Length: 286
Image (cartoon, rainbow, N blue to C red; front, side, top):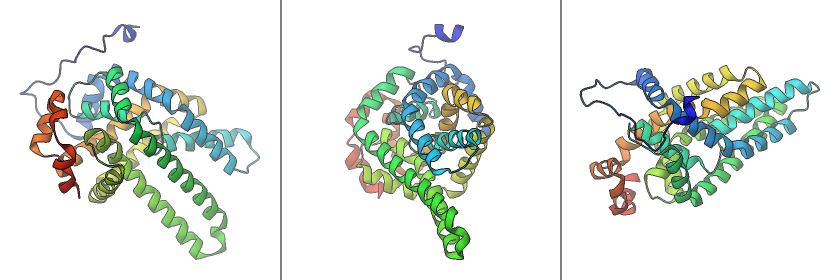
């Protein structure tokens, strides 16, 4: 039980300067293995805050299914609810969750509990609005898909409309990779965050779709049974999926939005407050 005897306020040993740079799957597994206790703790913290959204989606999905097999309905509702939490609204605490994962992707230290709570507090206003926007938009997706699946047999146009809804849903899912990372990196208006997230998602469509497919495959592998799904979501999957998402989001944001001065400031969190984020980023963000 050495996990619970760890000192999470002690920085890790980091990376040697002469160590070859890893990419892709090798980097992913190195990042996860290096701080697996932190990912586990972060996952548990975030999973607790996701319970209300998980229950909300579960009852929405269960209400949309008119089947007679209760066991199958519960299993399907659990699976879809889990997918919605992973790809859309999870919790207003997601800003703190993403901040820690962003720092891990940058191979920079973060206090797992302290920064999770502090960055959530700092960004709670925008986080709460974004959370309810995600709930509203994703719930509309569920109802639209249910409607068009029901009436698609009546004509080609209904099938086309269903296809459009699915494309828009995928596009919105791709934006999620950037919305929260941008929120904890810059001080921008929420509208600007959504606009920039859309532009960045369009600029990274191939790799973004690959990332979503991999995360769907990872999620599908754990949704074998209700018990496995709940345990996996609570123990490790949210962090594992979020890490993969931020390995796409942060390098893209760094490439298109961060100046050299801002990147250096992120290396030294103490100097972040000295930067005029709105003045230095708004122009290039547009």
